Image 1 (tube, rainbow, N blue to C red):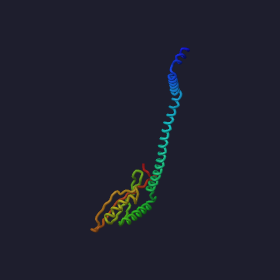
Image 2 (cartoon, rainbow, N blue to C red):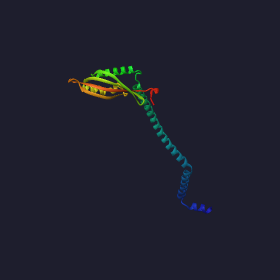
Image 3 (tube, rainbow, N blue to C red):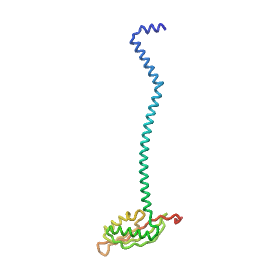
Amino acid sequence: MNRVLDAIGKLNPRLVVGIMLLIVGLLAIEGWMLLLRKPYAEYKQAVASRASLEARLSHSSDQTGDLAKLTIEIKQLAEKLGAELRMPASDDEMAAALMEALDRSAAVHGVMLSGVKPKERKQVSVFEEISFEITANGPYLHLSDWIMGLGQTLGNNATITEFDMKNSNGEQKVALSLSIALYRPLKFNEVVK
């Protein structure tokens, strides 16, 4: 041991300090590798997990907003569908409601409604198809606008099945005859299997 101390005593003091600093540095690196590397890795993993969770939470809050929008849209569509499928219960009330809607629409478009006649009824799937033959006359463009507006007047539960336009007695008026089919859902006990 004396030899080692004599050898160290003969060395330059700067070299001894450098060697000691090198040894302390190596011990610090080894200590970091053994003691601090695992907590540092866990810290980095926690930071990455936090960033991932924040991204998921922001995405889920967007989904909550989307869900609220979809709920409102579904409610509006259900109300619209319910309004379109609600027709007067009795046939007389339905015919009166149809004539009133057609007469009001014809007056707005400058068309003269000549007649509304009920036609045959038939079952189509789970609906009852009720047909009417309608006659009207007026200027061609007014009749065209009136026909184009029937979808809004009668709703989506009505369909024009056939129509015919003819020149009316050499005047500037056109005679129109068309068939409209209304669809009313059958009651559960009316559905034929």
